[in-house]
Image (cartoon, rainbow, N blue to C red; front, side):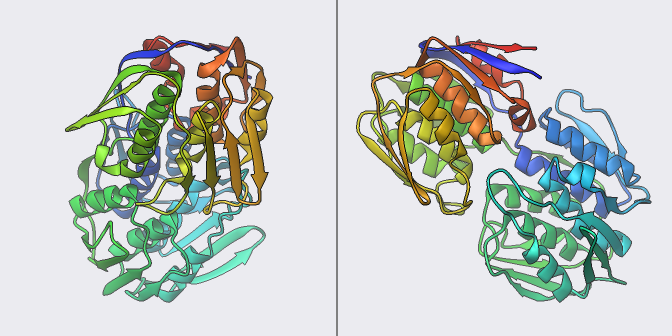
Length: 417
C-alpha cells in the first residue's frame, strides 16, 4: 500500500493550477443517465472516485469514454441494469446519486444503502422522503433501496435538514417529472449550482439553484450537452491553507474565488495576504500564523471539508483556535494523528481547542478520511524531520496528483510504494 514521505520545514513558492471539483463531477456524471444522447464533459479530475463512478455507470449500460486531458464522454443510450451494488457504493457514497436519475429515466432502481462512514452517519432518508412525495414506491430490503414509479410527479418538498446529495438527487429526478417540483431548505453549495447549469444545458428548466428554494419544471426529455466542471474549491482551500501554515508565496490559477469567501476570510485572519483577480488567487505568508477560530456550517458558511486543514494550521499558530464541527459528529479523527506530531489539541464534544505550539515533529501517522489526509499533509509540510502518512488511498479519492503539485511548489514530498 502506498504512503507519502514528507520532509518538512520548507516554504512553498510557485504556481499551480486547480483541478475540477470532485463533488461537482460525480453528480454531473450521474446526470448522463437522464438522456440517451452524449454528455460531453471537460475539466474532469483524474481521481479514484471518478473512475469508480464511471465503472458504476458502465455496468448500467452507459458508454463511458476514456478520461483524457480532463475530457470524457458519457452516453446512456439504454440504461439496461438500474442497480448500484454494495461493492461500489461502500467505496463511494456519491453512488446514491444514481437513484433519482434511474427512477426518472427507467422507472425503477435498486441502490445499496451507503451504510456508515468514517466521519459519521449520513442518512439518505431525505432522498427517500422526497422521491416518495413525487410518487415513487420505495422499500428497503436486504440493505437495498428498491424503488419504482411509472412516472414521477412534481411535488412540494420541504427537506428536514440541508443535504447536498439529497438536493442533487431530487433536482435530477424532478427534471423529468410531470409538473413542477419545489424544493425548500435546499442546499446552496456551488456544486449544486454547477449541476443545475449542466441540467439546464441539457434542456431542464430550473430556477433558484444556489438559494434555499429551487423550482424545477419537468420536461418530457433531456438532450446531450457540453459542460465544463467547476474548479475544486476544497483543493483550492487546501493549497491556500498549506501556504498559510508553511509560509511562502503561491499563485493558484483556474480557481473560483467567489466560492471560497469563508475560507479566504479565515486565512486573512491568520495573517495571510491574499489577492484575487478573475480566476487567479495569490497568497503570501511571512512569519507565524495567528490562530483562527471557526464553526462549520452549510454553504455559504465555513465548509466542513476545510475544517481539518485549518486545524493543521492552528497547531503551529500564535494563540488558541476553537474549532466547532456542526455537520458531522465524528470528524475530529485527524486530531489524534496531529497529536502524534506534537500538536496540543483538546476535544470537548463537537469542539476542538487547539493551542499553537512553536513547531511540530515528524512522525508516522495514518489517514482516516479524505480531508483528514489533507490536514496531515499540511502538518507534514510544517513539521521538523520526516513525516510518513499511511493509507493515502483516501487522498487519491479526492486530490489529483497532490504530491506532484506540492512538489512543483518546492515541497519535499514523495510517494513510496
